[in-house]
Image 1 (spheres, rainbow, N blue to C red):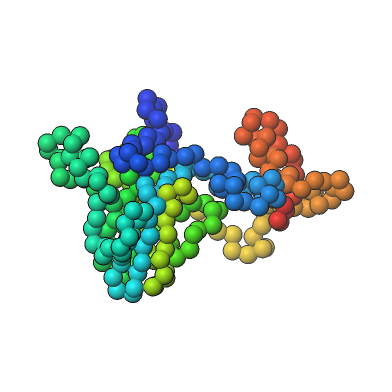
Image 2 (tube, rainbow, N blue to C red; image 1 turned 135 degrees about the vertical axis):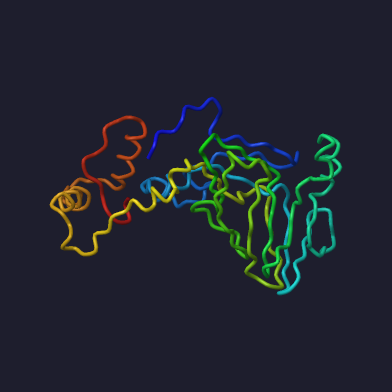
Amino acid sequence: MSAQPPRTEPVLRFYRVIDRARLPQRADRSAAGTLPARAARYCDAVTAAAAFGWYVFAPISFSLLWDGEDIYWTYAGEERWLLLDTVQFPNFQERFDGVAPDAVKGCSPPFLTALPEPGTVQLWTGLIARTAAEWSLLVRAPANLPAAGGYVLYEGIVETDRWFGPLFTNLRLTRTDVPVRFRADMPLLQVQPLPRAVYADATLDDVDMVGELDGFAAADWADYHRSIVRPNEQADRGPGQYAVAARKRRKGGCPFAGVQSGANL
C-alpha cells in the first residue's frame, strides 16, 4: 500500500447545514454505553470496532409508516401522517435560500425521499462531509449498537474528497402498518474515514488461501500455539489478555506474548 501524501487539512471535516442537527460525536468503545460490561472490559475486538468512526444523528425525531405501497411520515408538532414523496426539512428551504448565493438558491437538499424500491427511503442527516485527498467515507449502521428495529440501513462508500454534497443514507423499512421511530438523540449512522487504497482492487485481490489444515506451515502452528495453547497453560492467567495487549500496543507499551482465546478475547 502506497504511503499517503502529507496533509495540511484534517482527514475529515463535517459541515452542519441544518442548524437544529446534532453535531457528530466520536464513536466510543462502549457502543454508546450499550455493550455488556464483560465485553467492554475484555473484548478489544468488539470495543475497537465500536470506537472506529463518528456517530451521526437524524436532525429531528420523526416516524415513518409503510402500508406496503405508500410511505407516510410525521414529526413532533405535526399531528397528521403525511404522504412521503420528496420533502424538505421543516422551514429549511427559506433558511437555505436566505444564506446561499444566487446560483444555488432553490437547490436545498431534500430531507426525506421515497425511492422507487418498495419501502425504501433516502434520509439526509443535515450534514455535508469532506475528507482529505485520497480518503473516502464509509457510511454504515453503528457498529455493535442495537438497532431500533423496523428498518435496515444500506452501507455505502462515498469519495468525499471529490464530491461535496449532502451526507445521505438509504434505508429499507421492514415492517408494514407499524410506525417506525427515528430518534434525534440516538446514533443513526457511523461514518468511518478510509484511505482509498484500503478498498482498491489491488489491495483486495492481494489475498492468499490455505485450503486445508495440511497446508499450515510450521510458523502457522507456532503462532497458533502462542495465541491459543500457551495462555491456557497458564494457571494464573486472567481474562482478556488480548485486550490488555492491544491497549498496550496503542499506548506504545509491550504487549503480552500470549493471548487468551474464545469468548475472552
